[in-house]
Image (cartoon, rainbow, N blue to C red; front, side, top):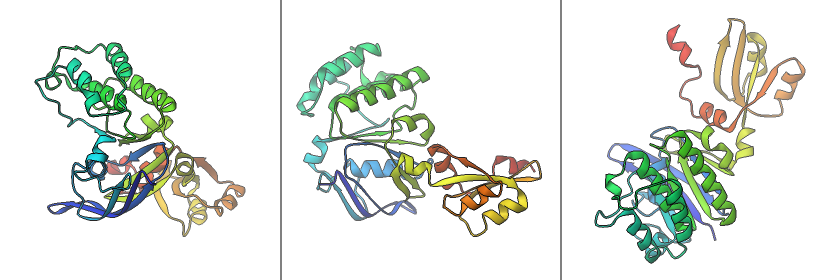
Length: 295
């Protein structure tokens, strides 16, 4: 059974289409990055998967069920984001103690160790925490649920660099010992690239890529050389980015294919890109860079 199965899913808000007929499946326990620029539709997708909002059209199944207002899906999944709320009638310590009533796989020892490591105030209320402390508590809570589907939406907003590093290490170590399906949404792929097995790239409400991180790295390459030569080598290719360097050389990012081997033999410099660079160029609205603004 697929953990997630989305078929032609759309969702709009007034005059804006957040998602436009997207389709993808998640079949295995793995860490998947939901990547895209701000406003791409990442948060809307995760809220639909968590059952917090209803899609407009298409079909969504999580554990084989429509997640919207579904108790079984709610009991086995969690969305961790900066909009998480907890009752002010309970302290942080009491929130952790009450969690096993809602999450059957709750790990109290992990929650306690992480809570002590990050030195949170057990008597504090969630709504009174600073942005960074609130994000840290949300992360502790999300990891400790050990939900079969755990989703993090921009989880490190407000965290300082040291806490972000610790969070990523804690997530990876816990995933290795307790595999489950984890989705992490971010517009900063370079920061989480080392964690990911798959990438789901969303742009303007559409799925652009859904591949393993190694396949994403091979999706596009950069070709550099004399302007006339690069234009000849890349004629007819899908160009994602182009930039003239020192008035004589051209730097072009194109979809990778076997035809580029001929360009390499003729002296072209073919550069392998990181997954972060591929996603940035593939979703770029312009072919040039910021320097073009100042010409």
